[in-house]
Image 1 (tube, one colour):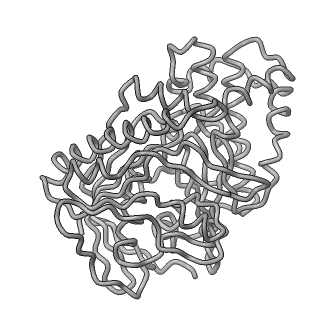
Image 2 (cartoon, one colour; image 1 turned 45 degrees about the horizontal axis):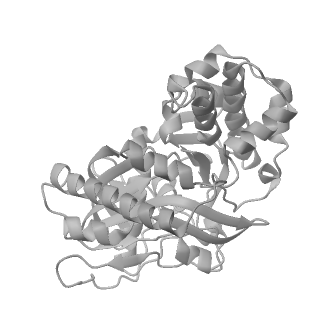
Image 3 (cartoon, helix red, strand yellow; image 1 turned 45 degrees about the vertical axis):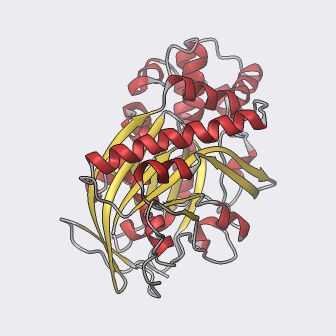
Length: 398
C-alpha cells in the first residue's frame, strides 16, 4: 500500500509530506520510502495560527477559519506529494493536522485539538484520508502523545545497548526502547518552542528562530535564569506525560525573565538551549540510555546538538538518517504508518508510551472519490521493521 503522511508540528512553520510503500507479511513490516517535501504555510495562515494559540483568547469563527485554511494547505501538500513523490498513484493520505490545543489538567490529558479539515484533502487528492489520530488514545485514558513511539520501537528494536529516539520539534519527545521491556515514551519539555518565541520576541518578528544556533553560540548561559526555568514542575512528573505550547509560550518565558532578568538576548538564547539539553539529558540518564538517535528541526541546530553531546558523554549520538529514515521526514512517515495500521484494523498507540488503558485503532476515515474499500483486517501487528536497502531488525520487545 502506498501512503502519504502529512505532518505539521508545534513550530507551525509548514507541512512535511513523506510517502512510502508499506507491506506487512506476518510480523514483518517492509517500508520503502518514496521521498519527502516541505510545503510552507502562507504568511497569513501562520499569523492566524499564532494569533489563536494559547494563551491567546480566540473565537469559534477563528477556529472555523483555521480549520478550513489548514485543511486547504494540507490538501495542497497532499496534491504535491501525490504528483511529486508518488507519480500520481497512492492509496491513502494520513493527516496529522495542526495541533492548536492539548488540554492537560494535573498531568491528565482531557482532550486534544488538531485542525485541518480532512474533507479538503480528500476532495483535492481523491484519496481516503485518515485524520484525528490522537483523540482515540485520549478517550482510552492516554496522553495522545507521543504517537511516534510505535514507529520508534520498530525502528530501534533489536539495537544493542539501550537505545532511544529523540525528536526535537517545538516540544522534545523521547522513546526509550529497553530490551525485554515495553517501550516508554514521553515529552521531555521544550525543544524549539521557547527558543523560537525568544527569537521572534527579541527580533521584533524579523527572525522566526535562532538560525543554526548562532545566537545561542554567541551568548553565555545565565545560571540564575536556568535555575528559574528548571523549577518547572513538569520536569519532575513521571512518564508517560505530554505537554505543548499551552505551557511553554512567550508569556511563560517573559514571566521567567521578570524573575531572573537577563538583558542580553543572546544569553537568553544560550540559556534556553542549555535548558533543552539539560532536560533531554536528564531523561536519558534516568532511563540508562546508551544510544540516542535524533530527528526533527532541532537536529539541524549545531549548538543544541553540541550541548546535548556535552551533557551526555559516553552516549552515542546519531541521526535517524543513519537508520535509513530522513530526519525531517520521520514524523510524517510515522503518521503514514499509523494510518496504514488504522485501515488494516491494527492499533497504533502503545499504552506503555501514552499511558492508555489499552491499545486503540486510531483516527477517523474520510472517504475519497471512490467508494471506500478497506483492506481485510489483519490479526498480527508488526514486530519487525525492514527498510528497503537495510537489513531487518529483530522483533521489538513486548
